[in-house]
Amino acid sequence: MEMRINDIVVKKRIRKNIGDISRLMESIRKHGLLNPVVVTRKGELIAGERRLESVKRLGWQSVPIHVVDNPSLIERLEIELDENIYRRSLSPDELADGFARIDKLKNPGFFRRIWLFIVYLWKKLFGKKS
Image (cartoon, rainbow, N blue to C red; front, side, top):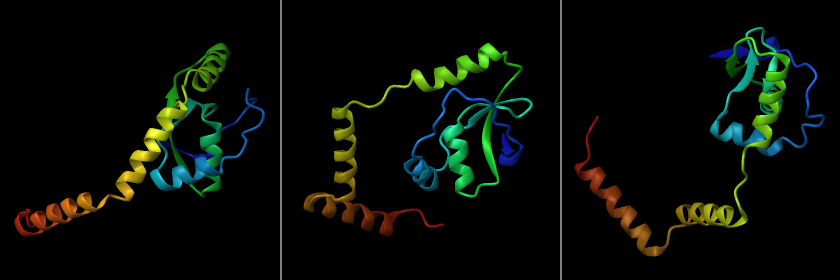
């Protein structure tokens, strides 16, 4: 489900400073919005202010949303807090492993390039024709 960005109402938030969102904007530009913003039935933002601001700056007119039915003020605050405190960042070792794997895929070694070329030729010669 999507909602027009201009129809989303941002009221008082726990987060006072959205910080630098340039990397989030680049991720959204490259991969799309991976998690929808969370709103009430009336379109009041509950969670996802940084995502919302990012897509605004990217010039989007609408954004994917997740609607929570009639949350109390306490539930709204709990959802906003939960979304920000229960996620776990990757450890330095996990980050290093992820970046190493990306680098290996982007820059395959000599034998890997030969194998990829063989696979490419095989598909070209014997793959399905559309």
